[in-house]
Length: 370
Image: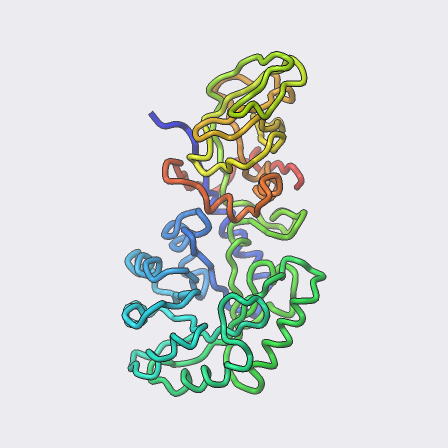
């Protein structure tokens, strides 16, 4: 028998969010970032829904590129972290998967490689100190790539470290370094991630890389996707499987971290960290029971959570419990967990049943503000 934990995927919302990105960056080509199983939503499911609607797809691994080609995807695929050895470079070429080149160790293959010719992405580290050539090393890398018979064009790329912070001065500094590093050289540029598309209009050109916003998620502190006209694609829900009355002074869950302040009803829902619901969520974290906003009571265990039902005293066994979704933004749950919404959706485990829907029920669209 199924445990009843479901991740409902609203594919209409996915297409809606793509439309928001198109309207915000009308002059740009769009890359749908589908790494990490499309942020937990399912790689092939999301990619095939967006096929023919975006120009490129971004993945983190060669295996993801192989899966997308096997599924019939014909659009451009970009390996966002590049490849780690020459054998993988050849496999990428066979899949027509474009490489991001970010380190001098990757250049040797391009010195010897032959066709077919593909675009290559030259990544510049403008301040994030993660991947990319420092500005003083760009000239040498560019010269190797432009001479390679395996390269049809060079796409210039960087990654913004703080684009979710709309007044952070580091983003203008990164943009300035990026422009200075390229100078008068020609080529398409790719700067914007989802946060930059939302907050930095000057980055909405060339190729924009949209990930989180496709799924209706944002990482701007104190905001949620609905604030930008986005709709969450995923709803995680379970059901109450038990109800009990706890007495004043009794403790709840492992370690007894929740102390009942009064006689109170508790609901037990069949969901836990074994499903990807974060164990480190504290008591008081928001949970919807039916359409009532309730609170977590005690530690999240592997298979179960306890819920303070004082806000929904009429709730009964079988009642729907929404962990996040349109009516309870994942950003709000993530804030309670001290993380970001991306981590929540990426963490859903294999034992959760995924159900793809073309539209959300109207009642699901009520929104509890973040």
